[in-house]
Image (tube, rainbow, N blue to C red; front, side):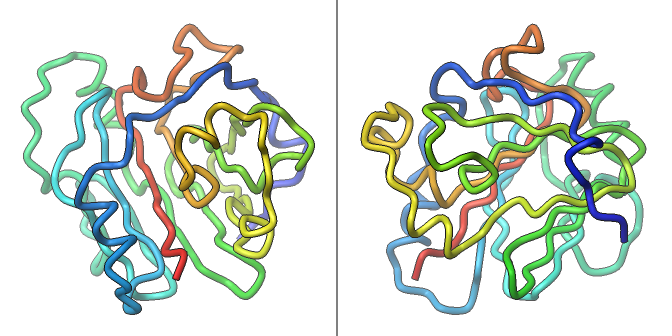
Length: 204
């Protein structure tokens, strides 16, 4: 596995406002139920619509792919989607091997197994003094430490509208396939991306 260093993350886009829809009631219930078995849950979105139910993750590593038989993992192609957009269908076809989420001692790593870039927003990738969250581009074959539990607990952003409106933002990572969002792109919000993931970490 190759780890993504700063030169490979070529575009750091500043996010202007809240990027994702509010967490759904069932994701909040999972967060508040005190369940100890899972360390995160994954939601798959197509633009502003969540497709399928939340995927609860207990194993230390999870492969998220589209329609390639990969054994145990989260197969997005099995989810029932009614989206007819040609762009969504095109991006779906490019997800392929997708990504691998791995929880390690130093945090959660995301490995890009696909043939196209992925884009990641995480509070723990930023400078603690930053007023906005950044979007990081990760090229095929590279990994990035997308989340640090210790750092997430220590984050304090009293002036950040996103954090004051959504307290769990510090424990959520957003990942889009193929298409980016933010200042460098025509899409300002992740909810405008064709296919994307929301990874919600268990804070208990």
